[in-house]
Amino acid sequence: MAVESKRTTVVNSMTNYILVFVGGGLGATARYWLQGFIYAESGTRFPYGTLAVNILGCFVIGLIMSSMEERFLVQPSIRIFLTIGILGGFTTFSSFSFETISLFRDGEAMYALANALGSLLLCLSCTWLGLQLGKLV
Image (cartoon, rainbow, N blue to C red):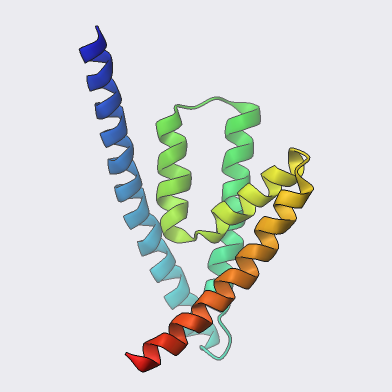
């Protein structure tokens, strides 16, 4: 029995990795198409494509998670495919937004603010640092 349970766990884990892999590819492809479409229409002076992808991804993760938590239950693998896979490939900003809102909703305002400010400041700082180090290499 223990061997069968361990085998089932390994298969489920591998299935989830495959779902994330396939979903991530679909999401990244959708992001590439949508950004290209928006940049072709608006130009590239302002990152409208990235902004649109992040806004859309945040809206969709809110819609999906609310529907799955409050209206109907789905297999965890479906949620993994849609949120971590497709939306993770589309934009990681959607995960950041959902997790921050969840912290607020759960009464963890300090953690939510720390996540928001930390992500903004640390990510911008690390991008700047990477740019600076990249010039030296």
